[in-house]
Picture 1 (cartoon, rainbow, N blue to C red):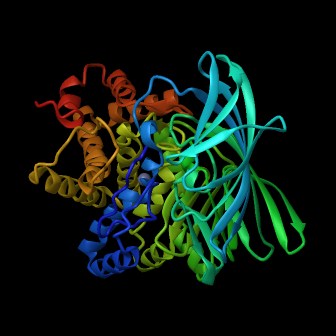
Picture 2 (cartoon, rainbow, N blue to C red):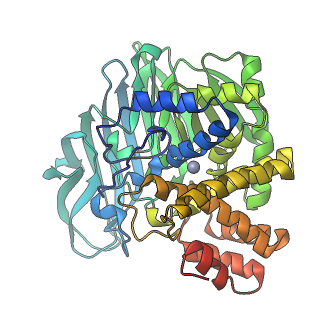
Picture 3 (cartoon, rainbow, N blue to C red):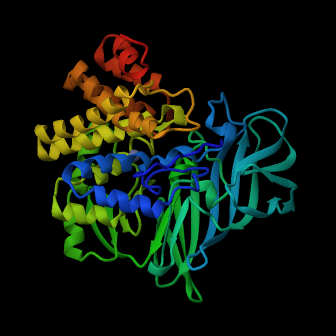
Length: 487
Ligand SMILES: [Zn+2]
């Protein structure tokens, strides 16, 4: 889809999502410095935090390419599993790998299959060891295959290499590298959020570094002065939350109700790290109780990495070290950690079917961060969060740029569009809570979460679940606040 993610001043490029292309005129170093400067007052801190959140997860949004951002009835293929072997070269800022992709045809007479490949260079494509013809155009890899009919499966092994400009960030001086949402920049895949698949990810890294990736670490082998770590993601997930972080991390861990929490740090002391992450187990309890669904994995890891990263991935989250410093200075500054953890339910496991319904990922996760703050610090702290969302939204509305939370397309989202998805989305969740009352609202969220856990959703799915709990139509509310059709 050629989704452009336009990065405006103060939007942290790495925070969220996956631009297919980023405006090259933007100097991200200056951008970050400006954000840091603005963060010196508490008001601007809050403002900046929410601006960051646009990308946070948003990088998400974009990965897709061209037509893939559009709503389609059905994708031509359904990818079942990715087996990715990747060797990032932190010094050279390059990647080399193979992606073995198992898929099923959704259509009759399929003669070619298409994947997103960012700016990667494809070296070969093989099907059962037989080389297949392929072409690359507009960031898509198109492979000619013997005819497949609906329901028939096959597997392609794609060897590639490249020097991605985004989607992955290298810090040679710090020996760190991590992914940032635009998965097709570092492996061939299908970016569309509705195509969930399982993943085996093998990372080859220098032996002294620590890697964290999706799912469970199943083996580590030493090969010369490198180590290969193999990660298995058993539950199907969208590709935008495939990812890894590699660096000279120290790992602390603790267990709570069958979940192992890991905290990966470099510059913080153990004592500081435990203070920074001390609310994580309580967040697990809170989100599970509100979701009515247990956390999906056995481990949840949080990495404090270099740069401005703020990104949820399946079973782990990468955040910047500034978050840790803020939290050490003020225990209430945990919005980011709560927001990203909330994505493990709303976003990662219940995923917008396409980016036009992105508010179901971001608006709900943003609201749930405020709900956790209410649980942790009380009603006044919650209302302060909600007021921030409302105020950010009101500025967009006052500028005449209010829109339906369901976008006709998310091809060229503006800064204001992202404010709508995050802040208006969260504010509307609060208003819906007020409309329905606490009992019905939280019951509705449980119905929605349980019904669609592991699936893809559109806004009408959410509305139906909330109406079921409400016992009567929410047409008027959704018309006014979600679809913007008037009162
Ligand atoms: Zn988010």
